[in-house]
Image 1 (cartoon, rainbow, N blue to C red):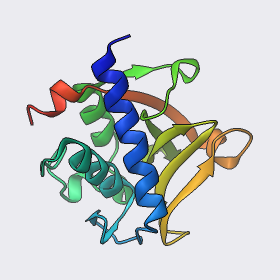
Image 2 (cartoon, rainbow, N blue to C red):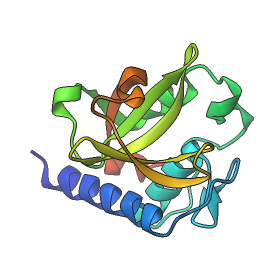
Image 3 (tube, rainbow, N blue to C red):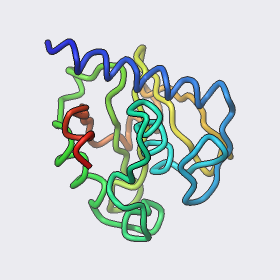
Image 4 (cartoon, one colour):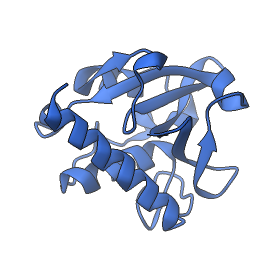
Length: 153
């Protein structure tokens, strides 16, 4: 495996855990450690790891997962990463979950069947278990992001 991708994934997983330990609060459309929603959590963690302030893609109403934005996030993940199977999943991979008809929630896998995400119901970043849970029933896709592609944004 490519060491750069592995270390990038490790950095994503560690940064996601840091947001959990900081008890980052839920904030609709937020994308920083002052507050975030699930999409903003993903953008904020990536920005922190890359030490950049890009928007992956423009964080607008169109990319707001909670407004039924079909597959805008999935399209971005396909552009900046590669879909993997559940069996290939490793810490740092991005997970998509379906609520209703759309992939409408995201989180970062941290290993041992756990992932970090920011959920309106918990009002902060939290760790949940993927295996044998409602989250496993809603799980749809996993993507491994490419650090080099993200740096071109």
